[in-house]
Amino acid sequence: MNSELCIVFDLNSEHGSKRVNPWANHALLLCIAMAALLFFSAAGYASSAVLEQARQLRVEDPQAALALLDQHIRSSVPLEAPDSSEAELLEQAELLEFRARIHRDSGDYQSAAVDATRLEQIAQTLNTPLLLADAQFLSGSIRAERGDIAGALDRFHAARRTLEGTVHTAELARVINALGVTHNFTEDFSRAREYFEQALKLVRETDHRFLESTVLGNRAMVIAELDGAQAGLKAHREALTLATELEDAEAVANQMANICSRLIQTGQLNQARTNCNDALERVTALDKSRLIAGTRMSLGDLDVAQGNLERAREDYQAALDRARDKIPSVEVLLLQKLADLERNLNQPQQALEYLDQLMAVNDRLMERERSAMIEDLEVRYRIEQQAQAMDLLALDHELQTAELRQRNLMLIGTGMALLLVSLLLIVAWRGFSAKSRLQRELANRNSSLGEALETITLLAREDELTGLLNRRGFSELANRELRRRSRTDEPLAVVMADIDNFKHLNDSYGHAVGDEILSQLAECITGALRELDIVCRWGGEEFVFLLPRTSQAEAVHVIKRLRQRIVADSLKTSAGEFEVSLTYGIAMVNGDINAAIERADHAMYRGKKAGRDQVVAETPGDKPDVAVKQRSD
Image (tube, rainbow, N blue to C red; front, side, top):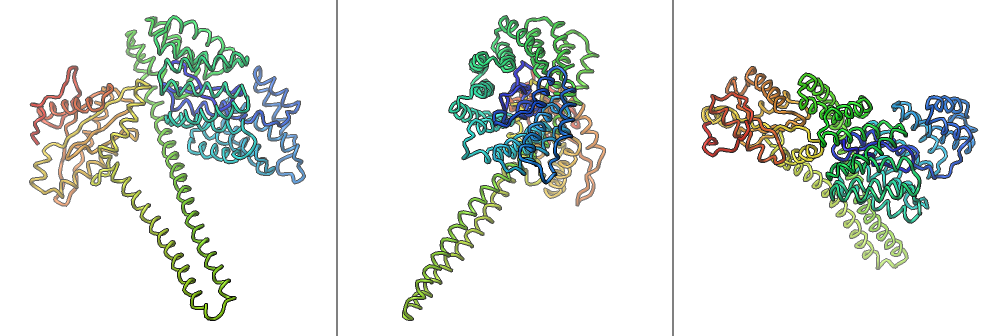
């Protein structure tokens, strides 16, 4: 992991771990609620003696703190009591919020969500903007912790809308900081940086130094992504200076761990050793599993860089013990690193065991990520719908203005002589015509926009015949996988497949039958491959598959299984049943997707020359050969 730690939502002591490079995506889900749950700690609600006692117990004995809070919350006036005073409800809200944080730290997300729901109910009962925004933010952080990033964005924007136009500038800055964190998770680093700059400007207006330290640390993470590790190192040191000045032990530990990672990235290994050991000592004292796992993985990376493989194994294993079943994204990286390390130490059986564990964790992560992406797209769709609704409101206002003008003219006309009646009728008719015209234009515009959007989306990404991705759609998703690979160094395989003797089928039975075969093959391929695999109709009878997190050996196994399924099933067409085979070429992506496709194409044509219906992997030194690429079918 290079120990790049959490981009945090708030300045409270709930910092977690968020990998931007290479384990950014899933670690943020585990980090979001860590820093956010006491989002408005400066809101001004008084703490009771019970809450103060619970805070003192929390570090040494979290269960005792929970027991104390449970007892007091049970004895408090329930939310449903009609005579509950505002002070009682506020105390209940404060205790619930603190208990939710403790539940979250112990991994009891269900109990944390229950407390968050009750907190939002109290906020709605009191109708206090600051408490309502606090509840909205808490709800968003719990959703993010569970992987519902789309829902988290929705609640964070709700908190932003609640605070805009109020005097609560620092609280608004925290919300904007959280939006930056969430966009960082979606890898929209440029937009995340804009949010962090906006939050930094707001917080400096309030002279809130602790929150400024948090935002500076967050901004340093995206600076490293956009401007490079050296620029990120400078930005983290700026955040460390402020955290040290404020004597914020957790923020200092967080930035020390980030600096440890940057030093390794920039090759300053001796300095990194001293810094990483200091960071480990600090995060261990805080007993934060995410920070400890991240720092120990960075130390393992440093050991590998310095050739101390046995020591690296100890550090990686210690980090895995902390991350297992708690931080899946860190667990993935550690399993891959341990598998590579065991191969280098000539322990193939142990390496295979780690790879088996890695495959299982990867499947779970990919499924959750796909669900989150779908929900995120739905949120974006709702935002677009809201924008269209605003346009509709503007047109409706124009209609209402025309109607008002028409009524005014008619009222004036009632006092005029009969000689003006005809003139009034003309004016009324013009107003009615204008209203009708605007209504027609509005309906036509909405219809045209909807049809155009649907048509453009389909044409831009999908092959019309098979419903698979076309080259453009494939290119978009392939670029995303390349970015992921550049961060995680996970294997990425590409496969070129070509239908054997397809020209003969077309010539003998016609293109309509050929199209039926292509469509059925597309369904068979997508049904046989995994959901995380990317399938594209490359052109004519050629297909390209991109297999994320798949080594060459694994890719050969997957494609052989696909080949057996295809050759075992007959394809039913209007001209009868056909047994169809394909020849497959496999190559590993090492940076340039087009070069990898060329090598896969070369491997495929070696299979064609060997008799077709083959699965052929690239060999070292494979280069496209013009003579080989002369098609024979």
